[in-house]
Length: 176
Image 1 (spheres, one colour):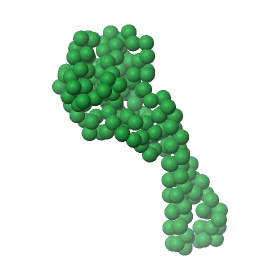
Image 2: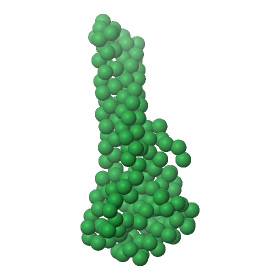
Image 3: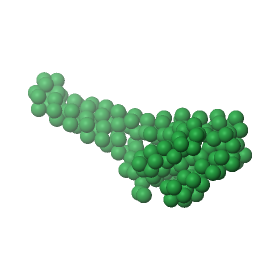
Image 4: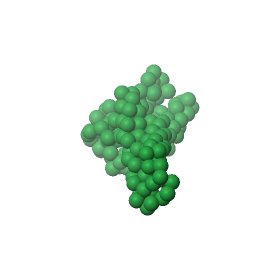
């Protein structure tokens, strides 16, 4: 599946289940791979002994960098366009301040629109929806539990995986 326009990651959606022991987690991971016909790279088993937990939770470090670039570029441009449209609307309404200072008003509205877009790009880059997912898994690993993580390529695949993980009896956590 192709990367997304704004994010640059192949797998934006992640879902995981915390399970009590490694045998149970391995059984669930194998069942998911068979049921959804997913490769091993998409369904990860994580234990407290894993040396690279972060890499298994977020395997696309290059994609995260692309997310930063793309999100700021596209959302900054979108914000500038919204600012320009706001100027055009206010100018067409004949607002005296806008009409009398058209260049200054256009510049201010485009600047603040772009700034708002860049702030949104920063929010996308921070990926606040990933914090509960990461914190939950890391906390479970510290308690000696295991996790099965699915790096879904679509929201539909994530929903199916989440349903299977829920039925496995594990405590499920997901990103948006």
